[in-house]
Image (cartoon, rainbow, N blue to C red; front, side, top):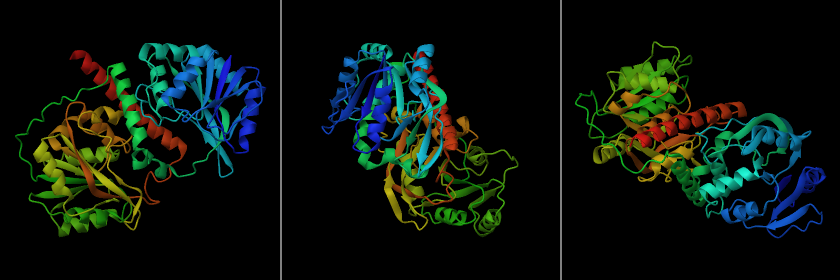
Length: 487
């Protein structure tokens, strides 16, 4: 009935995990993936020597050998305890829904404390390679074999094979989320959410990122959402602008950092006029007074307090961009960050002038509160290429900073009135039609400190954020599919 694929571990917990599967009458075979260190004797167990469990070579061979209707794939070598009748529940749901794959919520043990770890529903836009399915993935073997027969075997990759498999299965099958806590895992990565979010741009992971790009691009082609590197020309506005560039800073209650942020703008050396528009979203600390004093001292500081009380970061951006004081180009700076030099603004505008693009995205360096670099250091998002950047952008959660927009284009689409993902939504929307310019040297100090809004998020907030960005991608992918049908 079920084949279990289990990564071997020398840790004491492994025998306990293995015993749970051996005891189940529903499990016909346990394939223990190992590098030569496993020598089991149970009749149900078979060693599977592999270099990489998620390579295309390994997975293609494994799937071809399956003689059961279902495969329970454990994607992480760590302590897992099945909750009551978990295997039965996976099986019954798979049979009742005819899903290509079933995954569930789980309990998680961190530093000795157990807590709930819900996952989220899968959708068209859940193309990102770090989607959280938990540790157990229950596949329909007929659905897997049918998908691979129709869309081709898993790619010749070393690490992205499982990513390719689930994308191909999702093309014609549901990936079903069961909102029941079917197992408990002991978390081995105890870093805070804010420390994990940059793993995908760590230079040490560049090879797997290239593999993921290959897999994601072929998936977009399979569903008709891939865009060829042909771009619309940005129409030059005939309207006059008060300045060439405006730096936009939305802020609420950042009395400790907003003054430094504004001054890092005022220190810019340019061959054009610029201002800084600070949208003060009804701060209740001393932020408003600090900004009022700065505006009195320097006319380049435009201090806006919006009438609306329902604005997120995106809404504050819209207030600034739609204001009469906004320049030809609108450039981002967060209220707790700094430009890394006095030539940042000039470099950004130079790219607009030279390349005629609708948007420019720079690179930044992660620093602590004392402006000292912290790992992984420079975030340059070199996964973006002129030919495939707008496709590859759909599998990742960020694009870089500072982000700068050609104001007439941004005024047409505006940003979603949210405080998460608003800039990402605008960027992929713009990239649907226009080329985006890139700067791969550091222009920006992004400070990581306990006051950051994303420094250590609880799982429910992480899930809301991820689900929203998946929804943004769903909207964009549907739009691209429709656009391709018309062309």
